[in-house]
Length: 187
Ligand SMILES: [Fe+2]
Ligand SMILES: [Fe+2]
Image 1 (cartoon, rainbow, N blue to C red):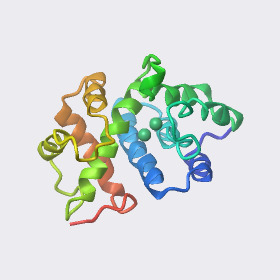
Image 2: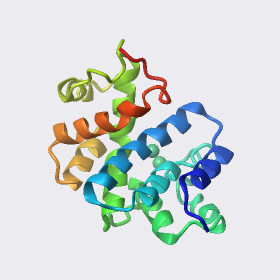
Image 3: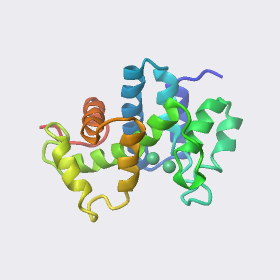
Image 4: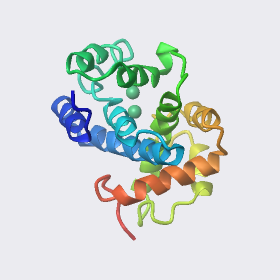
């Protein structure tokens, strides 16, 4: 198959109507791509994986099904095992080893991209002036973006061997160019 972003977007949007979920996919894609460039990895492959990591969430919204029941669909559509395995590994409940750079990066970008996105939605200028310090402060407020697992945010930075502030800065930088697509205001 042709492993292209256009193909992955088509797969994602065929299974996902929700704008919030599509935006989450775009945010995780942008962050994962930034790290692919930094690490000199295959940006298209990493981007496709990130774009598709929650592709089945709308049809499988429980841990009993997501993402494991999505995997056979991806295989049937011709996605390579490297993509499918990395997607499976983002789920904590499957406890799969994160033994590649792609797996570690996807996991590290998933919750934090969602959280930074949430921070931007409540700021008048979106993420234009968002600093790690205010993200950290919000992380300590359990009621803010309560669905984001804090322990996974911290574990992700550790997995990438980055200071949390540096990881936050990278994710904010990755999301800035796509702020309009994420529904974030510009200052
Ligand atoms: Fe997921
Ligand atoms: Fe996700």
